[in-house]
Image 1 (cartoon, one colour):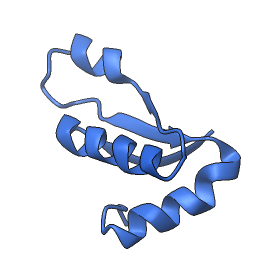
Image 2 (cartoon, one colour; image 1 turned 60 degrees about the vertical axis):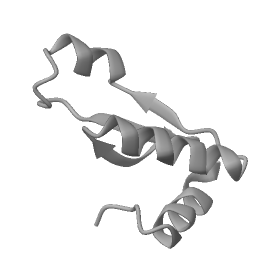
Image 3 (cartoon, one colour; image 1 turned 90 degrees about the vertical axis):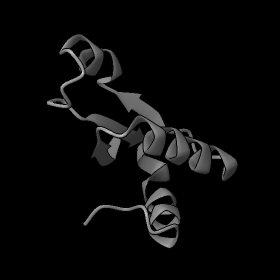
Image 4 (cartoon, helix red, strand yellow; image 1 turned 45 degrees about the horizontal axis):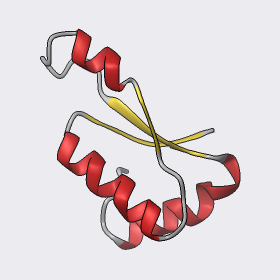
Length: 70
């Protein structure tokens, strides 16, 4: 698994997962439940992950959409 980005914005995360899915790439969100348990103070960002073989195409897709951090 490869981490693409971290965010506290659930709307952005949902958009990115949908964007990846439209291109046939499975986006996996980690730390969703931990983020909720910490009281929604945004201390723990959620991580957007993809399978190793999808990392290159996923990064290019997010960069083209202007959504890749860094």
